[in-house]
Image (cartoon, rainbow, N blue to C red; front, side):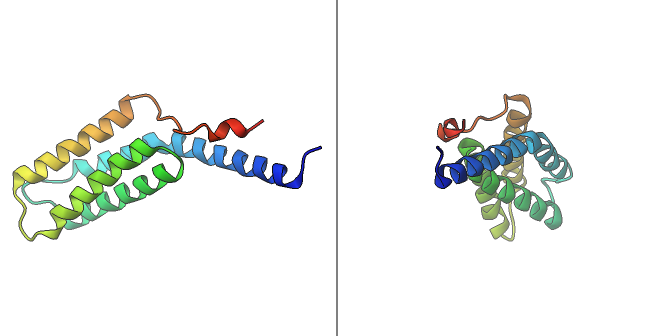
Length: 129
């Protein structure tokens, strides 16, 4: 006989697995939104709205990735977001600095779109029946 706690645990892990899969399935679209926002950035004169949008997208991706167990993906998004915060903190940033950041962002997005779907990093889901 299964206790109420075990039923609750199974239900929780089932929902978590579903949310994890939904995140994984939506990842190409999320990376596509980042790629589209990046395409409009001029490294000689980045628009504040475009840069703010990229920061929001990276922040959201970083948090969701870590929440759903995609640690490396989340760490990459967080590192890019933090570098972007530093760039935004200065009144004047050289075009080379923007180009370097945009190249790193491009590498991150391309790796995410071309590589295999990231896997959950924990064996916690093995608790499911």
